[in-house]
Image (tube, rainbow over all chains, first blue to last red; front, side, top):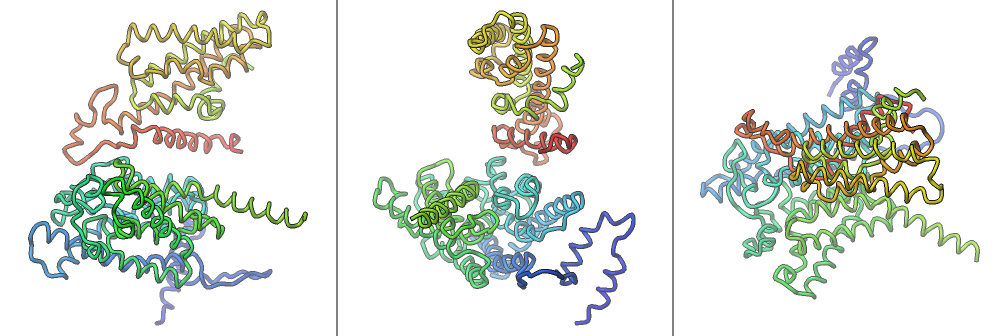
Length: 378
Length: 204
C-alpha cells in the first residue's frame, strides 16, 4: 500500500513556529501512523521490536475475545430477562450499541486529559491509555451512567497516573482506580441486583438480576452452574464474565511474553489455596463452595490475566512476583468469603497489592543482598 | 520578620497544612460538612492565638525542662473552655465534632507554634503568628468543607443546593467518595499540587 500521500501530508502539517507547542500531539499521531524515523545513533543499545506501542496493542488484541463475547452477553442477558426471542447476532448488536458509547466516552475523556498533560509538560503522549481506556468500560456494569464513567476516567487518569508523572510512574492500576472510584462514589450503580442487565438500548434503567457473587454474598441459592460461569452466560460486569474468552487473551499475552506467567499462575494458586483452606474450615455455605468456583465467578480471571499482570504496577523481581500473585489470589477469596460488604474482592485485592508491590521488591532485593553478603564473607 | 509577614506567610509560603503538613488529621476528619469545618477552624484559631499569647507572656518564667507540660496545661485549659462554649451555644455541631474538639490539644499546629514561636517571641508578634497560622489552617478547612459538602451531600451549610437547582431530576447523584476521609486527603493533595506549581521554590 502506498502511503506516500499520508507521509507528505504529515510533513506538511508539522507544527512549526507559533504552533510548535502542539509538537507532542503531532508526534503522537505521527508515530501512531508511521514507525518513527529517528533511531539511536551512538553507543551500544539493545534493539528490540517490542516497544510500548506494540505491547499495548497486543494487550488490546488480547482483550478482543472478551470484548466481543461481553457484547453478546449483554444482549443475551437482556433477552433472557425480558423473554424476548432474539437472534444471536441481534444480541451482539444490542451489546455493541450499549458498549460503543461507553468506550467512546472512556477514550475521549482519557485521551483528552493525556494530550493536555503531554502538551503542558512537553512530554510525548504515551500509548498506555489505549489499553486502560478499553479496560475501564469492560469492568463496569452495563448500566453505568456515562457522566459517571467520564468522571471516573478523569479521576483515574489524573489521580491514578498523571499526578505521579504519567504512564510508567503510576503505582496503582488506572483502570482499577476508575472502578474503585465508581464503587465508592456511586455504590448504588456498582453493586446490588439492579445494575447488571440493561433494560433497553439507552439509559441506565436496569432489570433485576443477581450475579453469582451477589447471590453468594446474600446467602441465596447459586443459580448458575460451573459450566455457565466458565462460558460466561451469567450477569456481571460487561466483559469479564467469560473465563474461556479471557483464557484466549491470556494465551496471547503469555505467548508474546507481555504478561508474566509467574503472576498469572500464582494468583490462581493463591486463590485456590485460600479456597481449599475455607473448604477445610467449612463454617458456612460460602466456605464449602468448591475452590475452583472462585476462579470462574466475578472478576477473578479477568483481574488475574489483565489487571494483576500490569507490568508497571506489579512487583518487578521474580520472587516478588510469586509473593505478589499469591497474596492477590488469597486476599481476593478472603474478601469474598469473609466480608459481606464487598461481594467481589478482586479489585480491592489487586489495588492493595499494587501498593505493597514496591515493598515486596525492596524486601526481595534486600534479602538477596544479605544472602550474597553472607556468602562472600564466609 | 515584619509583623505583617506573620499574618501573610501562613496563607502563602508557610501554610500550616500545605507546607508544614500539620493538623492534617483533623482536616480530614471534620470537613465532610461546611458547618463543623468552620466551627473547628474558629476553635483552633482561638486556641492557638490565646495559647501563643499566654505562653509568650510566661516564656521567661517557664523552666525549659518542663516547658512541654506547661504548654499542654495551657492548651488543655483553653480547649476545655472552647469545648464548653461549643456545648453551650452550638450543641449539634459539638456533637458532630465529638472527640475532635478535645483532640485540638494534640493538634501539631498549636504545639508547633508554641515551641517554635511563642517560647522566644514577644506577646504581640506571638498573637499575630497564632492568628496567621490559625487562619491559614481555617482557609484549607473551609475550602475542603465547601467542596466536600457540595459534591458529597449536595448541600451547603445544610441548604439543599443540588435539590433546589433540580439536578437530581436530570440524573445527578451525590458523590459518596467525597464524604469519606480518603477523598479529603486526595483533595488536600490536589491543593498542594496547585500550590507547589505556583511556588516553585517550595519544590524539593
